[in-house]
Length: 441
Ligand SMILES: [Zn+2]
Image 1 (tube, rainbow, N blue to C red):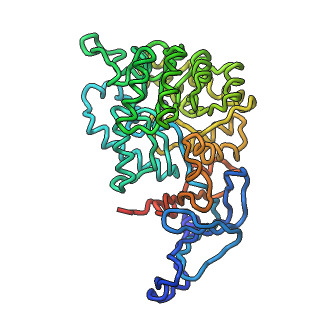
Image 2: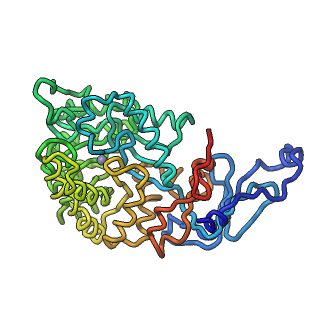
Image 3: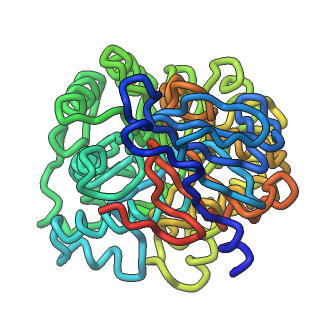
């Protein structure tokens, strides 16, 4: 540990007198990071010693070798491998499942839940995930969290959020599932529940109005709700098409939670941008996803995690039964979908497992047979493409946000080093150094 710490140090070299360094003729102050290795996410290759120049919140230039320009702040990352800031395209920052989750719904106030999300956001950033896509919250609270992080009042990753997931009556995101009839009411579009294409369009427009960046829809059953249907279709193709057409009109992408083959097929032909989980994806689905260029976010670790938790008695019986059936299948699907040419983006379902362990998917994806370099591309350039923000995120390149992380070792030789992110910079600000948080507030 001490060796690692000693290897990371910051040094200001060759400081000129301030008056000279900041005179009108002198270039703006820059920070340079010395990376012994840098993962080139566009090419999927590891580069040797590289100097990354940062000016303000953006990368300025990237040059091979070790350079220490006069007046620059130099960050030495000896022994480390640098990567673009990591991106997790499937998180739930306002929630974290625990043994009391289902009972808590009755007595934990919304404000308490929101305050917890600030801790989860910080843990996520410190794990090296500088950007996340939040695919389902309680009541647009992650829109507020996104804005608070952007304003600098909360420390966390850059957030793109879907607001609440949308669902049909009794579907995976109908939070009145399992309640007594007295408490159920009749949730409708204002509660993100719809039936039929017209209401689907209304739900999407309400999300736009409330500031969502994308839409998350639930066209199949799911594991963690109290309904019995874990994977069957819960939306018609017409309904999904209405969601996609309306969302795309407003510049919003559509992510779908889908476990069963039929729900996946309907979603892909209706034009969704990503399939999440995809557990029982069949050969036809794989062909269609490749043909349509639909991304797959496999959430592979969560599949394993929920099956293990279910066996330990952590969930109610209805949930446990589904978790044991669904979870272990995802590993097999990941292998088949990769071999079938489907494009993957990194999405983990953080919140179902504890926030900050977002790196676990790297381990399981490699176990499922994916090349380590591809798993790193999934969490950088591919995830940025799925967000529709690859012009500013996902690679270390001039003009992009200066999001840079480092791990002690080479993840292409040993993927487990992704669990030891020791340096985190987001938009040019250092949040973690020598493996420890840097206080910025
Ligand atoms: Zn999820």
